[in-house]
Length: 304
Image (cartoon, rainbow, N blue to C red; front, side, top):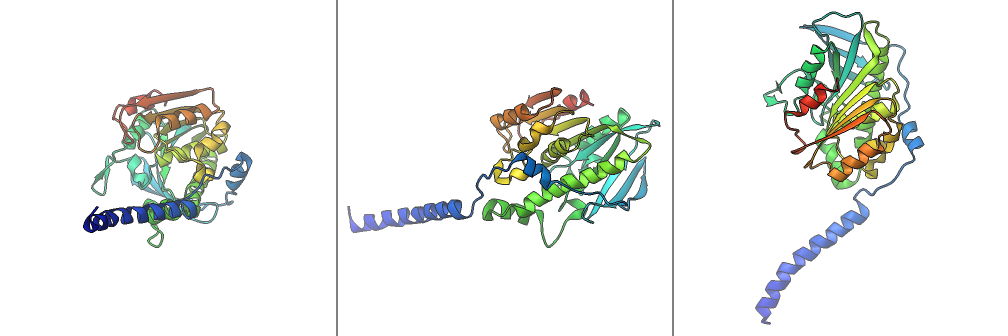
């Protein structure tokens, strides 16, 4: 082999070897590893106490809809919306909507927001629920929508998780959002016109993750509609729905998944479904990816 060829071969191989070494070092010292956590310890990490007065404040915006805010278990301000159906009832069943990552609560009522379409079509779920007499309520998750923090963006939280092995803020974001919803459910239970015994949680993607966790922790939940929850393993065990799925015993559960979901394989979805303890459960796998085909709404219609 000529000296020129040897030199060229080395020039090709050395960068590849360097990248391989860096990757190995990153995986060994930086990347998250699976760390199982006992179920009792996970449940304990969701302990909270609702303030005696959450300072619920409402402003009517028309059409039976109200914007509201309240203080959560840790004093954080939570913003959301509640809508009432056109037909008056003595007590209304309640559907609590939980949005996908990066989406605000407004998506549950509009087909586009700030010029971007609501591709998850959760607004159509609100329309269905309203037709069936439900009150629909949704809030912003931590670091989302009206609760964005310019000093701690959602992108920075996810970058720390995936690239730097720092899961603290991601787990706190999910856990505290679950607790924000539980404080909201505490408020719902105190309202004379809302039927706290007829409570449905509906969530898309991250919202489905939150809905499954909340239904495992709160016995007041009557039904769960979980649409394409991402697969969460023991790298972030505290916020992995499969770790608490055995506690989902009372609620009826509709799990809607996609055959080619980039965030959860068929096997992941089947394992999650099998782990759910409820005898009243249904799994519907649809063609397509994480953005479900429009006919998924038909499956939801039959569950409300």
